[in-house]
Length: 173
Image 1 (cartoon, rainbow, N blue to C red):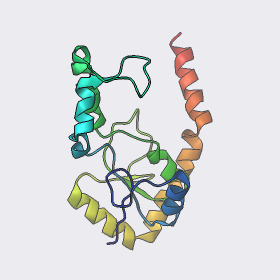
Image 2: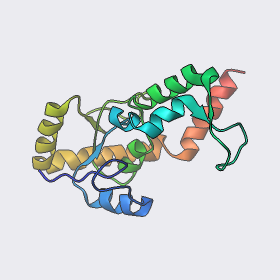
Image 3: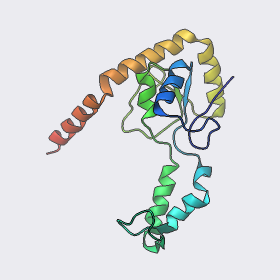
Image 4: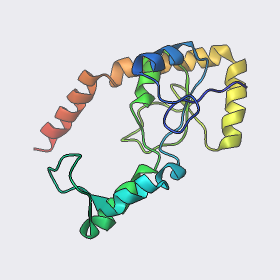
């Protein structure tokens, strides 16, 4: 199985948005790894963010100060960044009629029906098994990609999302 990975800390590096769309459109399976790997936060720069900061409103040239008052909040922010979360990619790939195989993530509701509009993997073995299956089963892969595309157009455009937000606000007045 030939797999190419892109993004920070991946061999393919960071792609421009236009290049990402091009790669996704020609790929049979698009893998979405939700969240950040823990090792990317164990670098000196990431750990320094827990203890250090620039004064509020200061520019990039301002001296860095030790921020003992906010250590707990900074640590919690860093910790939460390692948790799998839905990113825009979860909506962009189906919007391209691309098949997406994604890891588990924290969603606000369930944006897609699993197995019908999107496919989740639960561990490495499951991921490999599903890659092999969906490479063989082109009809199933295309059916799911098309269903995900229709769901994005129906429920996940900016207009639909803002309409939902305003409806929730109106109900809670």
